[in-house]
Image (tube, rainbow, N blue to C red; front, side):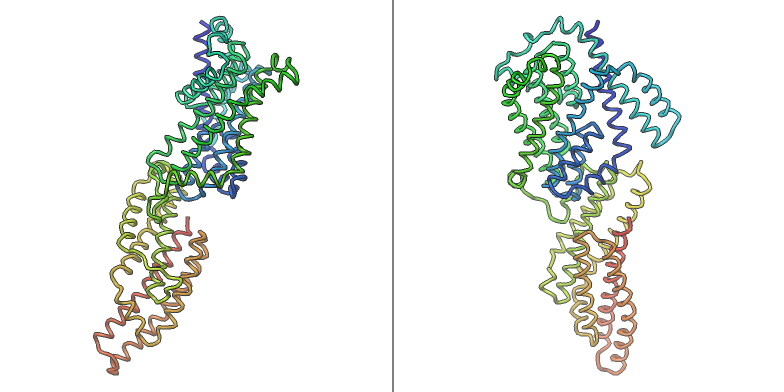
Length: 521
């Protein structure tokens, strides 16, 4: 009967983890992304933020999947995201400390039962943020009730299961236990549950310390399954991030496997009674230690590690749309950011093309307009498929602004694709040379702003330029009319000149509106 109770306790633990993690993600999802972006500038700072966010969310999978998404959206560089993944492994060890200190030492499982009622009442009668807080509280309570039931169930299990029932304490036996740990984490999608069960079994004497250590190592490796699944069909950046998580955890797990014996010998030398009477604390210390050591080594080798993964998964997507990851479509915040990054890249390409057409072949660059047209169609398709069904007002406004930006960038592309002859005519119109030069100068500055994602500066520059050109158009049109009237140019040439001036007015207007909508989110 107690065996069934232990299984029920495991179920409650898993349910509590799912409820609490999902609720915390709803409460802190956007804040978590902002935290990762704001404080992740180097692999080291990424490791710190990865540790903190995982400790808060109690889920390394949530952190690593978020990192994959941020890389896929083009918000984070690959090397910086590696730090987040490394740090998430340290953050996931905090769950074990909660289990040992609160579940075993303080025995607060029964004390926390009223929290489940409090959380449920908040979920029933409160709304929005408070309802999510209620679910997080209920999930937290369920976790420790689950631990309490697992402990009670272990009373009978330890009579049926002993260390002798598990693979022997040899290298082959430890590898078998490591594989068992991987399987457990892959099936339950939670290394925390596996660590909790392992700690409880060790506490009850059902397994010995080396066996428990091998299981925990395997459970750490098993957490990579979620991140690997999250990269299926994703961008090159997200696939690189996901595979890095797998490779890193495998190497860390392999190294930790060979540290078990030295670690046991160290504790037997420091104090045999500690290992005997507080094996669960020694185990979770081992869990934290080998993850911390792995992060320290990985941070030193991050550049080499990044280059290795980049060679394994080379870049194949066009530069414009590398951020368009279909795996992000269910997450409006990340999908919209990916679309904005893509529109930004496409806008830069068109601006460089216009600068090139206006005769600056140094700072300008001719673009493949046909390829860019297909990329714009791909971007439009992506934006159209972002799931906005239950989105927040800020995401809805972002979507509308991107839709406007998409419209203006397509019109700008049409001006470049269909009206090249008008650029040549523009250069031959008397008095337009200073205007063309001003447009080239400002567009180069706008390109620099867009490449730095400084959309406000780009909007200010381009709006000022558009207003200037609009004022100049009237004077230029008047001059052209005068030249036609004086027979200095033919009517046909005058009409072509008017079209050229109108082209200049329209492209500066589209750039101004494009920059405005990119900045207004």
